[in-house]
Image 1 (tube, one colour):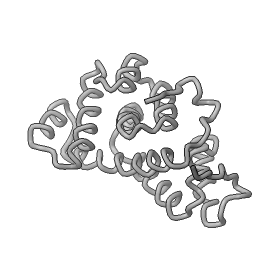
Image 2 (cartoon, rainbow, N blue to C red):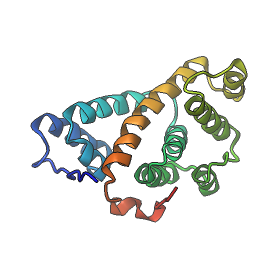
Image 3 (cartoon, helix red, strand yellow):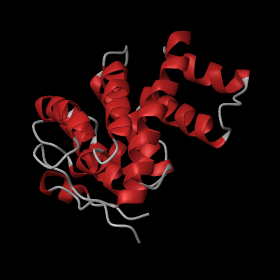
Image 4 (cartoon, rainbow, N blue to C red):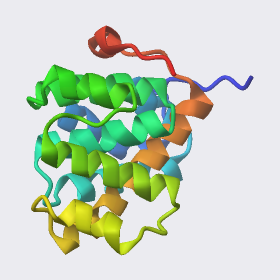
Length: 182
């Protein structure tokens, strides 16, 4: 198996350092997954740009984490599941709802359930969702624009989840309590 370096600001390729600095400011540390993604300036810069764009969207913090956690579970990226479980709990998502998503079940909260379900349907159907899928999502109060915004969340997740599955970084200490195995 290929080994990927967990870069620091000093060891990262020059074209990756600005993205890592931005993540350090936003998250408070450079997560190991991002540090491995820095091996490719194209990937880390694309990720940070998409990350910032998605986080500036209309979903609130808990909703973003429900979407990202659902994606991490669907993509079986253990690092991202631990990270987004930690962030979801920090954002106030009920621990039972976090546990449900981690176990591939729907949360009890109706909006979270609709968001998690629609996210999984988009992944499973590769975007070929039906009107019934969209209606189930918008029927709990999400807008038509948010149907498309879920795709932005998927794009961010795919970059991180696939990179995590390839680079297999060590889990950072702040996320160890949420360790997950597929």
